[in-house]
Length: 220
Image (cartoon, rainbow, N blue to C red; front, side, top):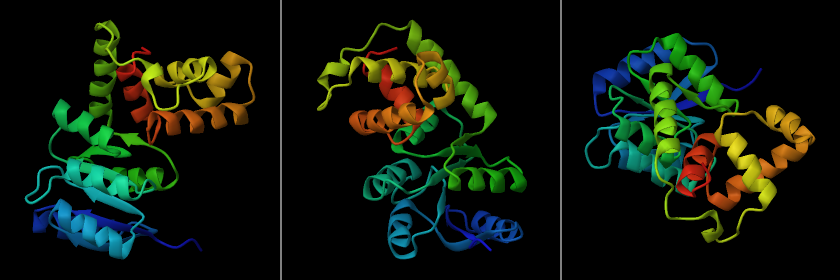
């Protein structure tokens, strides 16, 4: 039997934490390792408990969820953070994803949807609530029509090759590794290796961050 997925709850509202703990521990294969009330406490708790997933609120005293996510991912690039908040403001959405969150959900989700998001992230995926995802898509559409930024891809410490730029553009357009492989007549494993190298060069943690970085580098 696989060990239960351990979760750290980060929310400044005690009632919310207690409610989440009760409901999540009713879900098969999930357990709450701990709960804290702000971002600084989250960093300390993560260092001692090493949970599989962190459920992070945004607005909290001492240190907010976006800054805590940024610092947590900087310390441990393998950290899995899902932002769970009442706010779907564009600023929070994009800053949260740029900080390294692998999920962004609103607190009106059902407990089964939250549990599924946790399992998806643990399995290596990314999950953004549909209403929030629409904001991301709309932002990409807006950015495509905006003037290109000043920072060229050539300014990277290790420049991207022409093939890597081609793959990054397709990745940013939402194509899977299999789709890219078919488009460029490459093996899927080869594309996976390219994507890994690209993420390393541009300092992105996942495909969502890579798409944002592609725009900032003037590739879209």
